[in-house]
Image 1 (cartoon, one colour):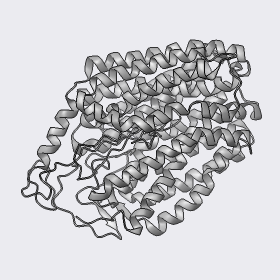
Image 2 (image 1 turned 135 degrees about the vertical axis):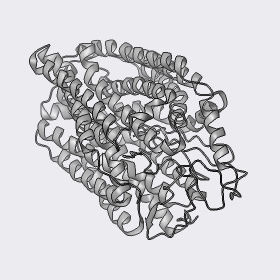
Image 3 (image 1 turned 30 degrees about the horizontal axis):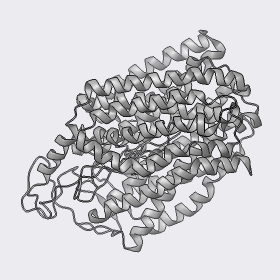
Amino acid sequence: MAGVRLSAPAGRWLVFTTVLGSAMALLDSTVVNVALPRIGLDLGADLPVLQWTVNAYMLTLAGLILLGGALGDRFGRRRVFVIGVIWFALASLACGLAPNAGVLIAARALQGIGGALLTPGSLALIQSVIHPDDRARAIGLWSGFGGVGAAIGPFLGGWLVDGPGWRWVFWLNVPLAAVCVPVALRHVPETSDPEARGRFDVVGAALGAAALGLVTYALIAAPQKGASPAVVVPAVAGLALGVAFVAVEKRRSEPMLPLSIFASRQFSAVNAVTLCVYAAFGGFFFLSVINLQVVVGYSALAAGTALLPTTTLMLLLSARSGELGKRIGPRIPLTVGPLLCAAGMLLMTRAGVGAVYWRDILPGLVVLGAGMVVLVAPLTATVLASVDVGRAGLASGVNNAAARAAGLVAVAALPLLAGMGPEAYRSADAFAHTFRRAMPICAGVLVLGAVVAWRTVRSDVLERAGAEAGGEGEGAEAGAVPEGAATEGAATEGAATEGAVPEGAEGVAPVERAGGAEGAGAEGAGGAAPSERVKGVKRVKGAKAKGAKAKGAEGAARPPCRPECVYHCGVSAPPLDPGDRRPGA
């Protein structure tokens, strides 16, 4: 099997390009929260505007990311990646130039579309172009540099907000894109999946995004308008469109979201845990940065720096957490992790007026970071282990979309549940009071996730998946690759501080694979589909061996790794990434 070696210039350029492209979405997701109070003051905006500044981006990203992956499979991953980078940069430029809150929110929604195009392509390009023997190292470099970006993101955002101004938080993406696009066009080969056919599920994508948008609008408007028709009608319409989305996906021959994937009880259970966990993370990271600035009195730079312990712990310990999850099974980590995170959020209620960092803030962040370390890597691995290898790309895309949707709803709903009025963030006392009510709500959602994990997640799910992967690899014909199977050296798509292995994260944290149609060949499943087309790179593909065991496999003594990469990044949480590899692979 041929492919681009990492030691070759083309391989190094590919990793550089994908890191740079991912950095745009990663930095944007980690620095915007830090800028929110200053944006509100500068534009004369109330709390709902700050919510929409976050959620407009998350809405289009969550609603379209599955479609974005399908577009890359059909029309070329490099092409869609480049279009996404350009789109994202132009939308970022518009965000920085926004004269008022309405233009900023619209530009943020356009940013989300660009993110949905570029995000699935970064690791997909590595998976489909890099030689299998070098793929694990390439993804390790990608995730490592991503982790550095996650660590410096809040610090950089705070420095920009306190220095040249919050608009530079968005303009920072423009020079990154100016470097990324020419490098991608010159040095990155095109890849696509010739088996990706059929019509795109545009109707499904539109229904899903519209349902999320209407429900989000109703939740954000409720504190001001109460149970008026302006709130009730959008809420009911959003729920109705959600039902219509399910009906459409059930009837389509090639749906964006094949509902059959939820036939796996483990997959459904772990996604329920994901919804709980990332809803809590979404609410926490949205409110905590505002609380540190408005209530505690930190500058933007100090607030961004204050949150670094969580990211640092993820960077240092996520890989070990993935190994622990394999040894003891995911049930205990998926139960203990959310409980630790809940305890950390309850400790953060001490971050009030006059709080001392080392006494009142750091302990909560350390406990929260420890919980994230315990939780994220096994969560990501379990999502992918709960479905067939050939559907790993779809599984990671669905899980990533679920995480983003959970964060979106949490940012919209939590101020309503905590009783935050539109002007709450302008008063230290008012915001401190509602922040102390919001943290127990987040903690309660995490406890619910822990209960779901304890009652539904099997301890042997990773072990069984590893045994199945090993069985598939036995005796395969030299050069042949079972359809959808992970190839030797494949690594995880991660959910660590998007580099600790996750947006990820951002996320995973999990590449954000967004396979539109079943069977389109999953990135994250260890490479391109058996009939993958790679322009400009000679690839010798083996015969498909779906359901069959070929004999005499090269490296049969070493069964292939599982595809364990889900990229959870975004506003909801630091990017998280587990880096869980089979030993000896």
